[in-house]
Length: 86
Image: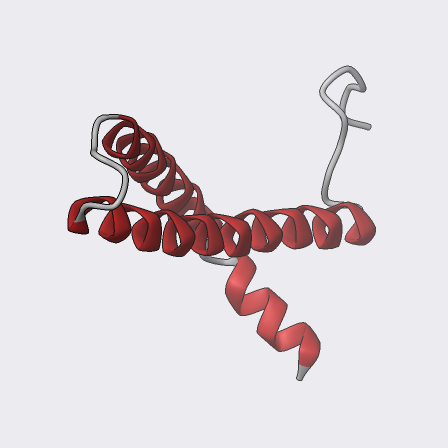
């Protein structure tokens, strides 16, 4: 069951990378919006909530990518770039 789950998740790695890129853009936009809002205004609190949500989603995405890379190395499918194929 566990191996099937990670196999399914890791099959979506290109989509996870796209999600990470999109989340990074949202993170940058949120930080800019926090920098240019007045502290205590409703938009400031909305930006804080958005920052928390984006950071949680980014953390989950980074964890999934790390775990898939770890599984790939353990199975022997991963090769360092400086070592030629054997």
